[in-house]
Amino acid sequence: MSVESDTAGAHAAAAPPAPAAAAPAANPALMGLICFLPSGITLGLWFVGYLDTTALPGGMIPIVTFSAGLFLLLSAMVALRVGDSVTAAIFGVFSAFWTSFGVLLMALNNGWIIDAGTGEALSTEQVGSIQSTYLLSFTLVFVLLTLATLRLPLMFTIGFVLVDITFVLAYIGVTAGNAGLFPIAGITTFAFCIVFAYILFDAFGQTLGGRAMSMGGPLVKS
Image 1 (cartoon, rainbow, N blue to C red):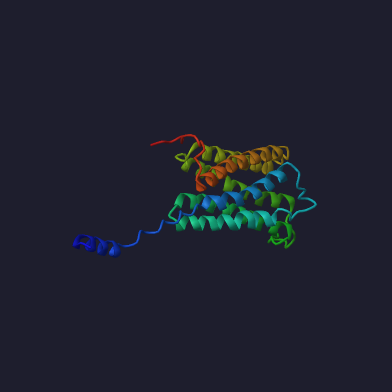
Image 2: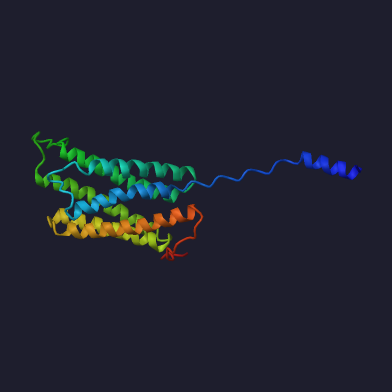
């Protein structure tokens, strides 16, 4: 055995092991979107009259509070952990909507909010005032979100615009007492659910090694 071969063998023995392959980064969109969809579909069914909230006033509470509200919050926390603040903000505001919507439903259905002046239950007009204020606040925030994220691919903007339209229709329907707008809001709700399902399908595909699906170019590129 030569000196060179002995030296080479020593170097080979001393060589550090190859580093293990890094685990893939977590994608919070998978959990966020798939838990968002059941609540979105339920909201659409409510708007079109499939879910009778007159006879079943609390029927939406579990799904909007826990399926969307809780798990979107968890998704926002995962996004923050991996440094994706934009995704965290998007999931965070949707979590805020769904959770507060569930609490509002519970409060109104169980008489937790009363007229402070009379101590009596709220009138129809007072309930409508609470609902319209709530809807207006989130409508403005979702419009802001849409404008602030115009640098995202077009598919995201389409989804957010449909959310905006849904909230505008619901707000006008409540403030004007025009129940005929709610089925239209149901259609736009189903539409944004389809858009977000498309984005979810793409996220699953890429995570599992597939090719990216077409999302369209952003409206703002600079």
